[in-house]
Image 1 (cartoon, rainbow, N blue to C red):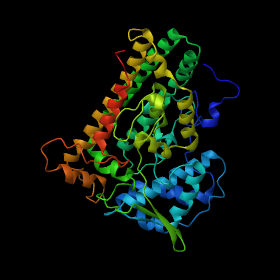
Image 2: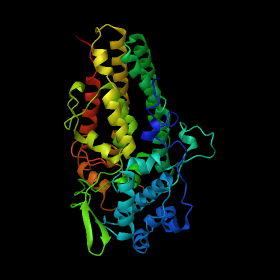
Image 3: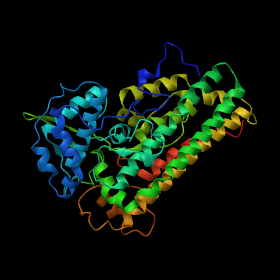
Image 4: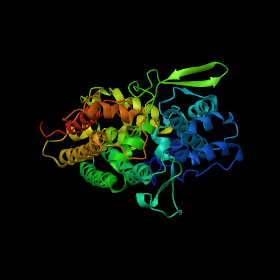
Amino acid sequence: MLLSPEFSLDTYNVSLRTGFLPDAPPLRAMDDPYYWPWEELVRDLPSRIQGKTIRSAVEQLPVLSTSNLQGEPQWRRAYLLLAYLTHAYVWGGDKPKDVLPPAIARPFLEVSSHLELPPCATYAALNLWNYAIPDPNTDLTDPESLSVTASLTGTKDEEWFLMLSVAIEAKGAQVIPLMFEAIHAVSVDDNLRVSNLLHRFSECLQELRQLLERMYEKCRPPVFFHQIRPLLAGSKNMAKAGLPHGLFYDVGGGHGQWHQYSGGSNAQSSLIQTFDIFLGVEHSATGELKPSESGAKNGFMQEMRNYMPGPHRRFLEMLARISYIRPYAMSHNVESEVRGAYNTAVMSLGRFRDTHIQIVTRYIIMAAKIAPPKDVPVQVNLASATTDQVKDSKEVVTRGLQGTGGTDLIPFLKQTRDATKAAASYAE
């Protein structure tokens, strides 16, 4: 692997050991008692939401200053706490609230600005910075060994849903050195080395797909759909769910601003976008493939980079500048080992996305027709909006159903999958 003294992954908060996860486990709780009001309320979120007391509790919170935050782990913990409080406040009632009170809005805007993230529950808050391990030697790739530090529902289903993604992130860390080795091999025209590394890349994707398939083990579709998913929804494209104007961030004194943000989405995983960039796969707003050589990027996938921590976003930009795997593979004969290894890698990523579509179909499309658990109140949210659309249909409805990120869910995922597979070329 070529990593010069001038080049350090630390600049991008990326680790060869843990990938996009923190190099050390995130804080389980704030040490400073000043921030304990946030901690105490987040610890009680499941019971507060179920008992419909979350909003009154949030409205009684003091407006805390961010000036006491020291070090990135504390800023990340503050971001996580405020993200959970925001979504609990907005979606934790009979109808969504469209005004976020100053006790949350003011510090959340400041913390988000520091971390270069939007003030909502991003993948970073829900996954990257929300896991705990029993001891330092714990295998991060084993979801059974991981636990959440914050939860909206208190269910094992939510914990498994989130920690499985953490395990995938940890497992995916092994791909990062492979990519840099392959990029170096391209630079010295070592086609045999490139081929071998691409085959290893494909094997890693297969392992990630096997991990993803474990979602069914401990996350039940009705629980995910009716309890977990509604609380993860954002404020963008959520008119049918009860937020026609988005969310007003009230900073006090009659000041504030309306914002519309996507909710937590796996599209915000820098790891997944890393695979696309490395292989030269690009996605347009319509899902049509654009030639990687053009450098043109837009659409939802590009927008999701705004929901990644700033250093991770810059890592993707850097990778896009130095990775020429696809042009290199396409410069070889269609029957060459390099071209074959590249096509295999692309199709492996396509199969990973096939599995994702199958999971979304089971956990959203099919789950929308299943009655909610008896202890789940019926309320106006993303779940009820989706259920209303599919309940009278005998067909499998795929259009118009929105994800927590605000996309037209299944068509977007299929376009992304098809664009991935289209990057492979079996002809001159």
